[in-house]
Amino acid sequence: MTKPRRLPVALTIAGSDSGGGAGIQADLKTFAALGVHGTSVVTCLTAQNPAGIFGVQGATARLIRRQIQAIFSELPPAAIKTGMLYSRDIIGAVVNALPRGSGIPLVVDPVMIATSGARLLRPDALRELQDHLLPRASLVTPNLHEAELLLERRIRDEDDLRKAARDIFKKFGCPALVKGGHLRLRRRPEEAVDAFYDGQVERSFSAAYVRGISAHGTGCTYAAAIAGHCARGESLPTAVRKAKTFITQAIRHSQRIGRHWVLGWG
Image (cartoon, rainbow, N blue to C red; front, side, top):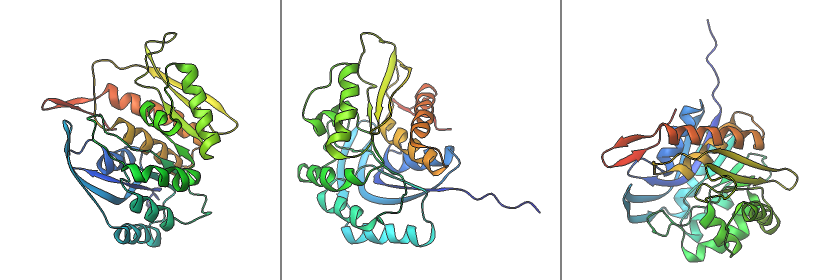
């Protein structure tokens, strides 16, 4: 009799996207595509679709703690990813509920503002994120706009991108992957380049820029793929490299749903 295969477990702590393209829904699809069992802690309910966000309702701190405790009691994760946390109270609940010194990789996608312009992190929550969550992170994955908010300066070229990754590490004490997908590079205009720095290793991860597709949930999926590969036992640089390939393929194989694009998971 063949022994059943033991699946690694990954945990996403994020908001629910009623449109199915981002948030918890994107994370769980990504984990499944990577052969990882996905568990979830829902921080917020959102009323949204690819065109915009029309309402947000945050979960209580008590319920968030209960969800985390329920997961760790029976399905302890091998890696954790956070996405939309929304409020100071939610971030505090997550920080206090996650076990300290566990060595579990924690990938933080610092979701702040949606592509539509909707605010996904309250202004009073930014300091909580910076002071209490980022120092616990194994990796933070800001896009250009989020990195600019964290560092309070513009990022204009590839040199700025690399320096941003270094400065985020220095400022918050966590490795950084600064995503440059929307940065048009003079030297490499046909490539989407991300800058990684972990205090010792500095790397650029690049892939051919996929034109003509604007898919919802790319940041969520990228961070979830990193966490998924970490859950499978990969080192952080290897997890980032494999996740870069995964998100590039997901964008390349996007499909139309109505008037919008959806990523091609798996």
